[in-house]
Image (cartoon, rainbow, N blue to C red; front, side, top):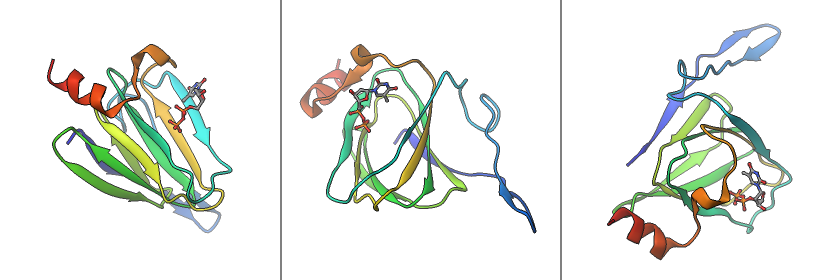
Length: 132
Ligand code: TYD
């Protein structure tokens, strides 16, 4: 499975807490794009796609959601519900996001610019792509 959970180093004191992410240092790629998902509602799923080339880091800054991760052979569920744990998803991983809390805030760091042609949005096509 081409994913991992990264425990982020937390700088904390009586003022609060701080976490820093540096491309190619704390995460395994250069950051080219940042986006965030917010105003989520339960029972509205997202994702349902894979990326041919892109790698991502996802952090639940607030709230929670489930990530279903699938490499074409195995399907695993990861619950993201902490701002100090980052989910790394590598190439060729099918992902579905479900069970959002109201107003979950997901920050996503991506290894490349947005390119719709690089998405695989159909599960059968994903399996075909793996077997090429
Ligand atoms: P979508 O891929 O459906 O989001 P999710 O992965 O959470 O299911 O993206 C929603 C819309 O936003 C879609 O029209 C594509 C657009 N979009 C961009 O224009 N740039 C981006 O960087 C991203 C991630 C999405």
